[in-house]
Length: 142
Image (cartoon, rainbow, N blue to C red; front, top):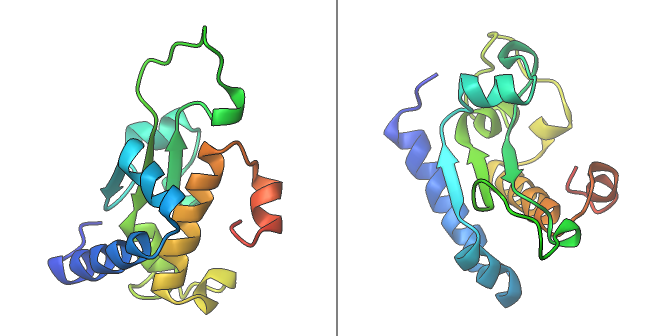
């Protein structure tokens, strides 16, 4: 699904506000670990993750080795980066309609767009620092 400029700009402006309000140490991380923003995850990425586009809304991704799992001998093929996907976040918060045409009924619809972007970003930052899904849920970023 292609997003129009209105939704892209709205998303990107909120993301910039969120990053500007992060604590200094996380802003420093944002300078060191690239953040890639795309409308949707690619078919290749979903296949690599064994996810079906019709059954999942992948909002973000940390790609790399968590700081807690690195060793001097570890060599990665690609530098660490984080990704956020506008379309899934916009759909989960009800800003745009669900791909299936059904209204989204989930905990995500109760979150505003800005809050969901922040939660997704902090979720991926958490993965960078080695937190797993259960730890992120405990912190409210799951």
